[in-house]
Image (cartoon, rainbow, N blue to C red):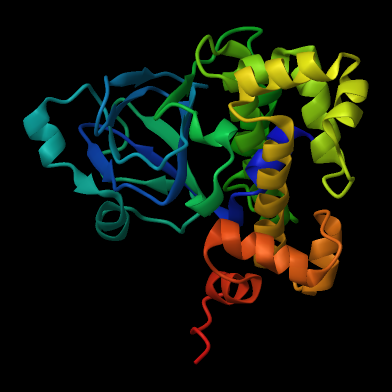
Length: 316
C-alpha cells in the first residue's frame, strides 16, 4: 500500500452513499454537518455551494467538490443571501416531501424545466478517531473545477458515474460504490497535485522522505531502524532524520509506531483476525506487547476497541 491509499483506508468505513438529483427554478437545500466527508459533482448546469464558514463557491458542469471534514453547507441555484440560506430546506425533508423517484436517482423536483441542474450528492463514512495527517490537513472545501486537460482520471471517473447512475444496468450495485471510492482517491490526488499549501504534498514530493514512507507503509512489521530507512532512501541517517522530522513533524521511528497502531486499529475494526495475527502484522512479537502499546496509545484495550467499533455493549 502507498501512503495515500493507507491514509484513506485507515478511516474509510462502510459504503459510500449517493443521490442523483435534478432540480430547476428557485431552490436552496441544506446539508447538515456530517461525521464523514461529503461531495458533489455537477453533471449538468450550474449551482452554488455555500459552506457554513467560508466563501461561496460557484460550480459548473463537470466540477467536483469535496468536503473532507463533513462541513455543513447549502447548495442553491444562486449565491443566496443570509436570509435565504437561513430558510434553506434540509435535504432529507426536501427529498421526502418534494423529491420523486428512488434513492440513487435520478430524482426530480417540482419546477424542473427552467435552469435545470443535475448534481450527484454523496458522502463517505469516516472514523475520525485516528485520522492520518494527510487527511487532517485537507481544507474544509476542495473545489476541483472542470478544465480541459486537467485531472483526466477524475474526469473519466465522473463520466463513468454519470453514465452508470440511474441507468439500471446489470452490476450497477457493485460498480457505483466502487466508482465512488475511486472518485474519493482521484479528488484527493487532484488536490495534492494542485495544492500550494499544506505539508503532505511537499512530504510526498520529497524523494528522500517519500522513499522512507513507502518502505514503512509497504511493510510496517519489519524491524525498521533509522539506519535501515536511511539506506532505503539512499542518504545518511542524520539527513533522513532531519528531513523526515522537518516535513512529517515527527521522527521516522515515532511515525512508525504511530502508523503501526493506527493500522492495527483499522484491522481490529475491519477484520476478525485474532490479536496474535494483528500483532504480527504490525510488528509486535507477542499479543501482550501489542496490547500494552495499543492501550497506552488509545486508552483502551484492543478487545474493547473492537467491541466498541462493532457497536457491542461494554463488558461487565
